[in-house]
Amino acid sequence: MKISTSLYFDRSTQQLRTVQSNLAKTQEQLSTGKNIVKPSDAPDKAALVTRLQSELSRNTSYQDTLKSANVRLTSEETALKNTTDVLYRIKELAVQGANATLSPQDRQSVALEMRGLREQIMSLANSQDSNGNFLFSGSRTGQPAFAQDASGRVVYQGDQSRMKVNVGDNRRMNLNMPGTDAFVRVTRTDAKGTQTGVDFFQSLDDLANAVSSGDMTKVQRGIAEVDGLQNGISNGLAQVGSDLSVVDLQNSVLDEVVLRLKTTQSDVEDLDYTSAITKMNKDQLALEAAQSSFSKISQLSLFKYMN
Image (tube, rainbow, N blue to C red):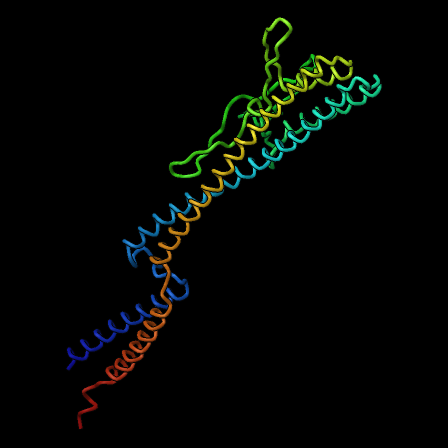
């Protein structure tokens, strides 16, 4: 009887521990909402969840990069659109200045407004993003794209670098546009037929000076050059628009990838509350039954049956 009683106690205690452990595990799952609380619960599924989390983190990083690229490209687009509007106004003033009936004072007034608009374009060319980086300086984002040298001539201080960023596992895109790609040089032909390149701002300065002095030949030449300057800005806008399309397309791709990864992770990791609650109730009943059995077994004694 001594050996039998000890065996009963050992088995009952072991059963109680097992049932209590199962109940505690289910309660922990319900409190966290996760089917896998510890890697030991399901090593294979835990490894899969870890891989899914890593992929989600990488794709989220791509999405953050696209947000930054979108802000920068939108700023470039705004600057170039405003430049286009200012160039149209400069052309209107140049046509007005080409009118031979204007007095010298009128031409001076027109030229003065043109020089002010030229300064506005230079300000737009030196636009900065929300982080204070200059948009059109290439990789030299810490300094203005355009500045006047000692002679008063406007020079480009940036470089021709196009920075690229990863926006997908196998996708890279442009993050910037060098100023010389939008604020282009124009080709000027002199009386001898010699062609020379003229900087964007030099062309505008020459046009304003021609209007001021009443040199109609140079005014007509300047009006034609403004068309070339506008074409350069238009091409820059087209490039920025193309890059913004890439941002939208890649965002759509990443949204689908992230949704698929989250769905897969949820299928593996998230808890089925209905099944878990049913299991918890079952474990509670099993624990109550085990406790009741142990209580009766613990009262067994040979002396109770001895008269």
